[in-house]
Length: 151
Image (spheres, rainbow, N blue to C red):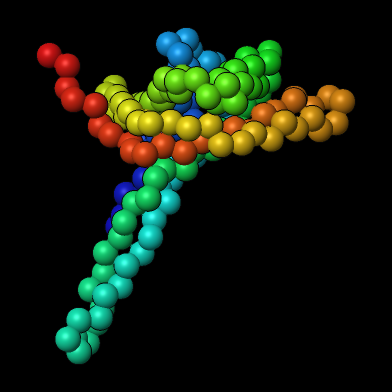
């Protein structure tokens, strides 16, 4: 006999995951409907000395970040364009920081730092007249790290 497992009571839900972003020291509110962070990976397979199988490894090139946001104001697009204008002026790059936190349903939290963030592109989408205007922003980052513990 197996016990019934209620996954909806134990898995991390959307309300238990938050993403945050700062540019030039100021928060940029990403009113996220959904977001993804995934590694861009090169898969390696090296055949060595007639071995039966290749030796497998991977190289993480960078991380891809996609955030689909509701538009309450134009702050996300303004931050994107401010950064682009700064690049066009060949000024020093604006500091961009991101992080996300998962809140398991056991009262703990798991924060992560996103390092060396770069805006890539955006997609502004207005559907029907009653639909929310959405903007999807794409970014890349060199690393995702677990921050050191604070004592």
